[in-house]
Length: 417
Image (cartoon, rainbow, N blue to C red; front, top):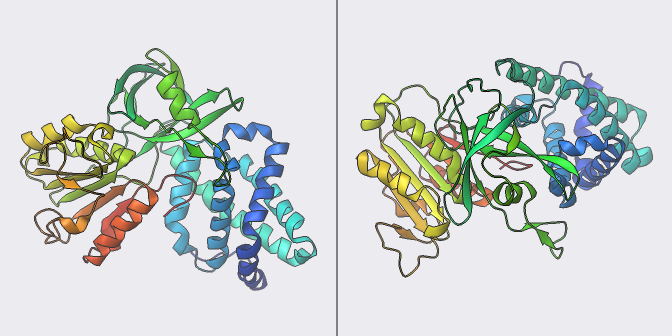
């Protein structure tokens, strides 16, 4: 992705000149945009995360994206990773080119509504041109992604063939296609979208869930945390349970049908055989894609000699999923290490068995060479968990001299890290 050739030099300057405007008014513009667009096209509520509209996450994320775009308008290469992240998410929601027409119309109109006369015809034309240049890049990339999906280009009905409680918070769902056709392989670390009807809002709602097992042609497994209290709006507003996770936990059982997307995502571990060490670092439900990576690595011929360290943090041993499974892999494969951090060990927990370290994940407590494998410059690090946790882990690794390109993070939610 290079510079935008379709914009005239004067339009480039106008876009760059509006960066301070986006800092001041960007969130207002995007809030008005979503309000107007969804009022005119309520069917799009089946695509957008409704709680993220209410709590302001979606408008803030879009405002941040517009700011990044305007700031890098003459250096779009800097936006490459963000575009890849967004295009994979769009593909998992089956966003189509016509959707970009709707977004473009209401985004430019929202700018006019908020900025008034300050949005001169020249600035309006520059932003319209800039929007469509970026939209064309994303439409083109999403088309490439769709072409790689072997004809699976719309929601597909899956049956829940098993439901297994993994911890006090996390339950696994085994999903098999109703049409019985073999499932395509995926890259370990990727996710699927799952869509269910939510009575409270009277719309279908999609959510992305990491696949938590190695690829299978017969079923996909997701392992879902039951979200008990997502904040709505201001800090003093009432909380409510996560719509889709609670429906899956409380209402969906073996034999029920859900809609599922093709696997997507730009966070994954290569399936190619390798010998360099791999360090998997997670907290909470962030262990799900890393469990998929671990199970896939174990199934390879290199599993008996490749150094792997699975590092995980959870509040208690009872909230931690796959405890016995990961411990058994470590026992049967001497090259696989596990380190579990817990912030609230119980009286029954045994150190060395139920946990290894007290507190949150702290990489400084681990040996740099025998546990983090920093003596091998090819070591790869995969991080997944809450945003603050991932930032801290990345900073810790970079402080120890790990190159940024050796660190991969799963950026869920409406924004990024």
